[in-house]
Image (cartoon, rainbow, N blue to C red):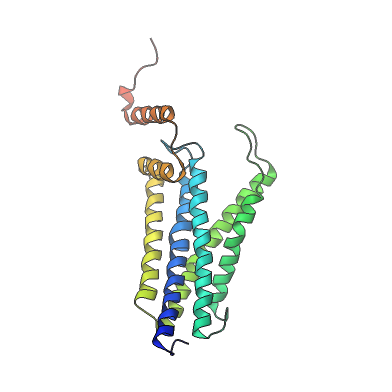
Length: 232
């Protein structure tokens, strides 16, 4: 238990810190950023047409793997401490969120094919998209609630400093940066940033397409009276 030999106490503390940090990065940074990229990345200048999807998928997979690592760290921590598993509000909320998150790849694998350009979405595709968004929102909200109750639970057990402080800092940093990114996008000020992020994570467009995109961006910045005439 935590009150045993110094070596055992350090192992218990390390397991708690690992659990908090992995869950904070997964639910406070990676999952929110994955959602932000899906919302903002379509048609990003300088990025390949499917770059937004690749960026979204890569970030979500990283979060998915990290939350599984956080679950393992929590189980090891409780085992070392000698307590019971899943017998508190935090652990019950946490395991429910992890279960939903772990099922997301299955839901993604079962998605109906997207329609061709100009075609109408099928009813099954529309229903899947709505379900995917609802589940994604549930994961974001549930993850934040689980993280908050986990920090409170750790403080009630007498832990502080690196355990709760690191988790709080990582959670806040991830959420704030994702929120600022989306605020810039909604304000129409983040085109260059969106293009850079989506290209880095999902792939750049071919040079010819990037040149066309740069020309369009320069044209958009011209005052209305300075736009070149298309008439003879």
